[in-house]
Length: 300
Image (tube, rainbow, N blue to C red; front, top):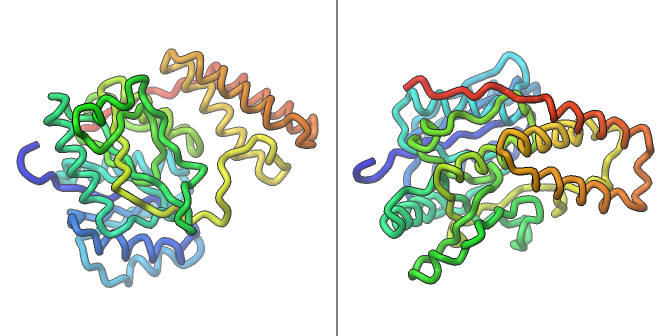
């Protein structure tokens, strides 16, 4: 891309109107202006549709309302497709509880450009430092470094090389999406972002930009813990289990499954998770061995 890239923000939302309003306000106040905001409304029932229809936008915006909830994976896939059709050079992906600081996008774009010049090839993505509401590190959103993560620092850069991150402020290039395809919408939720950025990093590593900051508006600062499984939330963990095993297979990275097993066993030890729920997770893992969504690509 030549000159300043046009960045489209892609926000996926479901029944979190109060948080969404704050996120959209923050997007429209960026020091590096967002070219267009794409909001994917996953069939919300809390008045989100009516709010978006009547909102006084300060930046160009497109609202895409799904007839059914397609999950984060389906929403981001649809948003990237729409933003690409709209001519965007880069896609800034985030959930509806991601509050970007005023210069978050500016710092991402700057680091992306400097990294491109330094390494001679553009990174596939750039991600922000994710903080919790009290300013501490958000436990849920730590990017995974490459083996040589400090190489940019040795060359005078202010970013680190990473191989995966969450969709809580992830800037992805159109070129990278065109090369590796779209996220697997069939994943629905959990591990869709990790699988996708791992896939992107096989094309070119991503960069973690500490100077770009966002706040993840979670109720509590706690990462995914398999010891927290209950009858009410197990459906989420089942998606995570299936998807992580699926990713280990499709990416040819068996260590993903090894780490998963270590985490599940370690975190469940002494947790009191009932045996029937543990068996459901085991069945979900087995499904992951045979769950291989077809890769889809941009049409333009």
